Length: 132
Image (cartoon, rainbow, N blue to C red; front, top):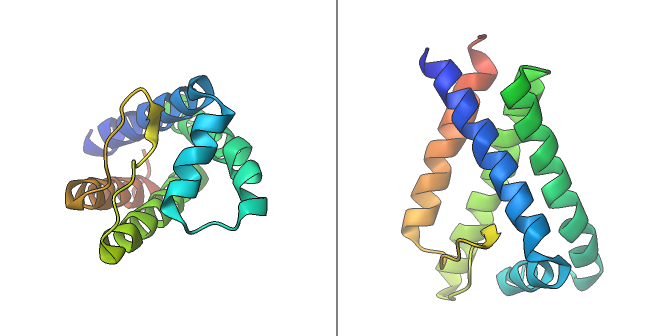
């Protein structure tokens, strides 16, 4: 039951995140990505399209039960990358928005964001290794 709830929560979060990024618009998403100062400019445009697309696929798979293990591993990797990026921003002493849910839920990167993401990574790994 715990794994099923984790799968549903992750699926919902990924779908909502993707939709929020799409609704926020390309320029808003590009500004968030640039704010991290981790991605070369030529890749910003690619990520503006790729991130919500990948999030949407992962979320849909987790919610529908299609390719659950692959989607959960994808979620863990993506969340891990987001966590590392947030930790780097914190280590630099910089302040920028996390962009987790587009402009609809703006939140500055903080230790709370890193801890939340680590918990979500743990849930994704749980879903990846325990069949439902």
